[in-house]
Amino acid sequence: MRVLMGVIKNRHGVHCARRKVPPELAGVVARLTGSARERQSWLQRSLRTKDFREANIRAKPVLIEFDKILEKAKALAGPRQLRMELSDSEIKRISEFFYARCLEDDDTFRSEDDSEEVYQSVYEQLEKAGQLFSPGFPKAPVPKFGMSDRQLSKRAETLAFVTEAAREALARNDIGFMADEVAELLEDFRIDLDVSSPAYRRLGTAVLRRYVAALKVKTDRLRGEPIETPVVQYPSPQSTVSGSLTAALQGWKKYANRPEGTLREFEHAISRFIQLHGDIPIVTINRRHVREFREALQAMPVRRTGKLREATLPQLLEWSQKNPEVQRISAGTVNKLLGAVQAIAVWGRDNGLVPEDTSWSDAFSGMRLEEQEPEREPWEIADLKKLFASGIYARADRPKGGRGEAAYWLPLLGLFTGARLGELALLLASDVSIG
Image (cartoon, rainbow, N blue to C red; front, side):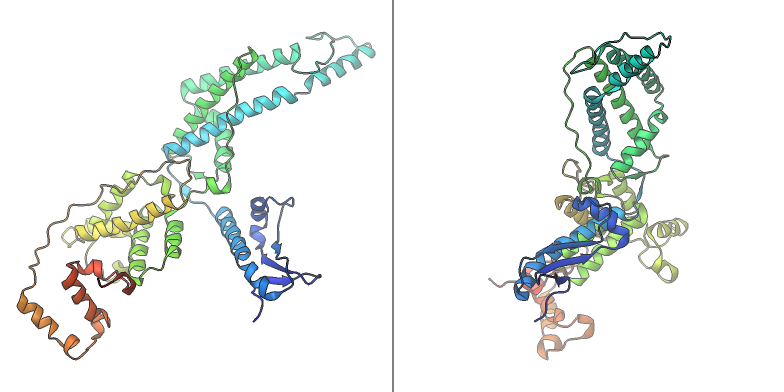
């Protein structure tokens, strides 16, 4: 028995769990772990044992934890998807964060402003030097607590000037007034938002409104109004990175063993959605996305040969518009693809890929097409006798096209359950019990 890979001995013979941090992730890992250093090249933790068997047991959860840190760092350091939309809850969260931080900054300024000490010191130096000057405020002792008359007056003067400019910008809805602040907020929340998108204008307007509101509160505080500062919920890596469909799909695949056919079906559905809309965060998927996806699927041709076999969904949609006579896929197939994407999105929401303080309703609910009743006739007794007298049951034949034992069991399961072939084919042997 050997020690696990990633387990080493230190100079005292004590085993340690260790993972190398890729150079491009060193800075992100340092932030995630709260390291005092700017960059962290290794993740290491003592296992507090010299026995290698015990070290192997203790190392497994530690190494898993290290792997999760590295995965999170990759997500944060990797390229971010350029987004065209933000949900209402995201816009509210960002703008409220900005508002609270404005008031927090005001608290800090009011308690830590040391400009009065500087003013009085300069006043005294000029007076001793015999310099002639016209002070705006007289020489006075620096207050032990709080602001002086000069500080209060200057603060009010500054707020009046800034408030006038901000209110004029708000009257014109000139969100360019807040361009630097919006850019900083988007970086704080690790969002790449297209500045030409309607979502950027909505965010800019929300931030500008909250800025004017914050300026009013600051002014009211100078009049003695006891206005509290909201709790500032600083964005963290866990809360700012909304999970994408790809992340949800990967998590769904790891969550449980899935039949190969189911995996292919769900991967195909997700890839089609991404081809049309990109790998957008689940929280931004709305009913317009689903409707456009459904309409694009309805245009897909049944038979796809040659270049069409590798064509993306937008390319298939364009081709179908030029060839209106081709047969399209059925409503049932469209619904199956919609259902697969819906299942992954809902799984992602239920498993933490949508921030807990962000609401997201299932945009796929009620969006499926109506399906016609199948025209197939039920099996007659004579048909059943012929089937169960075939070589599959009489001679234990297992034709290649019947997928081995599936050729034997699927007809039996269909006979006793009445389920459809598409439902039965997804089952595992462990899903079936005789009772």
